[in-house]
Length: 262
Ligand SMILES: Nc1ncnc2c1ncn2[C@@H]1O[C@H](COP(=O)(O)OP(=O)(O)OP(=O)(O)O)[C@@H](O)[C@H]1O
Ligand SMILES: Cc1ncc(COP(=O)(O)O)c(N)n1
Image 1 (cartoon, protein in one colour):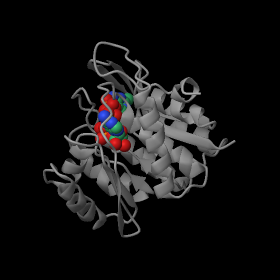
Image 2: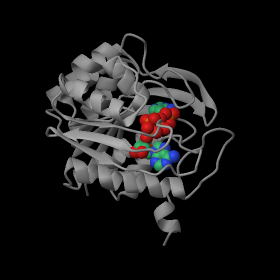
Image 3: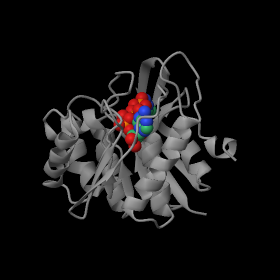
Image 4: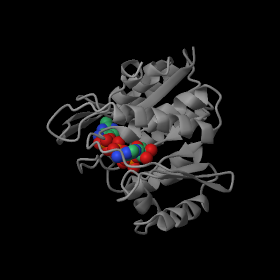
C-alpha cells in the first residue's frame, strides 16, 4: 500500500486541513499519516482560534514518521509560522524526502490568517525550493508575485514570474476567478491549462487541501505531474457535484461521491 504524509493544520469541523487530507488519501486507497502543525478551532463560518504546535514537537512527529513508515509522497498545507517552517525544511532535508506537494496556505476561505505575517519569506527561501509542485490559489499567487491577478493572462504572467526563482512545477488554481475555475500549470517550461466550468456549489471549504492531497496520492501511484493534477481535479469535481450541504457557511466536500454515483 502506498503511504502519503500530510503536514498541515487540524480543522475540527473536518472540511479542510489534516481531516480533508486523511479523507482524500483514504478514498484513494492509500495509507495516511499526519504531522500536525497547529490546531484550529473553526467551522464552515470561520476560524475562532489557532493553537500552534511547538517546532520541537513538529520535529518529534517528523522523526517518528520518517524513522518507521517512510512516506512515498508528502503534502504540505498550513505551516503557521517561521520556526515551524524551519524545522519542517530541516527534517525534509535530513530524511531526503522527495515528491512534495506544497499548498502555500496563507488565508482561509473565511478570511482568517493561517500563516503569520513575515513567514512568507521563510516559505519562499526554505520550503518552496524543496517542493516538486506548488499549488497557490490566486490570492496566494498575488502575495508570492507581488502583483494583482484578475485574468487568465495575469495567471500566465504570474507562473512565469514564479518560475524565475523556482524550478519545480507551479499550479495556479483558478477557483477565485469570476467566470471559470480554470487552473494553470507550468511544468518543464510548458504551460498547460486545465479548463473547468464553475460548478454551482457554494460549499467549497477544503477544495485546495483536497486537491493537493489528491495530487500527492496520484504521484504516489506513479502518475506524472500533469496526469496527477488531471485525476485530482476529477476527484474535486466529483466531490463538488455530489452537493453536500453542511453547516451555516461554506460547507465541506463530499468525499463519498464515488460510492454515491455507483
Ligand atoms: N465552483 C467550482 N467549480 C469547479 N471547480 C472548482 C470550483 N471552485 C474551486 N474549484 C477547483 O478546486 C480547486 C481549488 O481551487 P481554489 O482556487 O478554490 O483553491 P483554494 O482557494 O486553495 O481552495 P480553498 O477553498 O480550500 O481555499 C481548483 O482545482 C479549482 O479549479
Ligand atoms: C487547517 C486548515 N488548513 C487549510 C485551510 C484552508 O482551507 P479553506 O481555504 O478552504 O478554508 C483551513 N481553513 N484550515
